[in-house]
Amino acid sequence: MPDKHRRLWDAVRGIILKHYNLLKDEFIRDAYYINRDLLAPLIGSEVTQGDYDWLVTPQGYESLRDDIWPKLEQKHGLERPKTWPVGVIYWNETAKPLSEVGERDLGSTWSQARGFIFVEKGGEADKIKILSKYGWLICAGKGYPERLMRKLLKADSRPVLALHDWDRDGGGIYKALGFETRRTKHLDIALGERVIDLGLMEEDVKRLKLPTEPSPPKYKGKPRVELSGLAVLKSRWKIKSPTLAYVVAKMASKGFTLSETEVDKREMLQRHMRWVLTDGLRGIVDEAVDDVMAGLQNEKSLEGTAVEGSLKNVEVVAPGLKEKLVETGENLADEMVWHYEGEYHKKALQLTDEKLVRALARP
Image 1 (tube, rainbow, N blue to C red):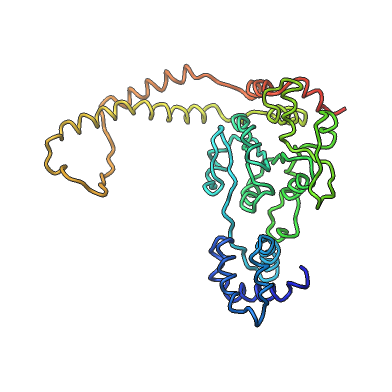
Image 2: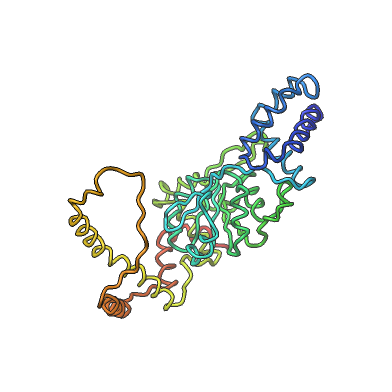
């Protein structure tokens, strides 16, 4: 931290330590504004106007978020205020906000997933979301993986593939997932060998002859290639979805199966039969409700409006209904159509192109 801001950060640390109970349950951006408000009366005594003005800049906020708070976590055991989660996770091509993901998703809903593909950009994740129908949860971020995403992945045990640009930040994203960082080493959220690098490499760029561009000045203008640069394969090789084709080809070259995991047939039959029979009763229930409402058409107590109404739970007893459902279920079981891993994997390989597979194949 530059010496010219030493007084500022000493004052800010003092405010955080004194008012931690006020700040800890806020989102970090909200806590930042509270911190600024509490700092303002100290202008002229503990900090200068210039110090305060610098804290108000984007760089000041980022330093507070990424340097000051992590050091307070490590030294004093304070938990940094949470950030608003911006990531999403795709399963069956449907995006679920990271803020709504729970333990049930990992343990039940997504139990047949083989692993995760973390993508640094939401737009690139959308291009490969179809792979979430082939056993891979697509985690869309916004640059480096946020803490909540890494905590979620840490709670699991399946592999995590890191898809990123060929540049300094891309390599940093891979390392941030797999290894401890200065800012998060105390949180134990590094995934270690579970992380496999799926991103663009220098050899990929050379083999595919992808156009490069200079990195920002802070990285001394070194050549870089965004995942979007794969788009040139559409005009060169007539590949319809270059990013998707690249990912499938690279996953295949690394020996990953593109399919949900297989489960016990009895378990699957039971699950599907429950869904089908429940859904099959919907028409009968709708007809029954319509008949009830028709019979109550002149009921005076139903006139007017209300905010809410409650009905007691009942168990419907219908003579012969269970036997009919058993008969229907047995017929469904006889007609069950099964699909296997090899079938899905073969279908997924149709999403890439043989020329791309050969180009990415290791010598």
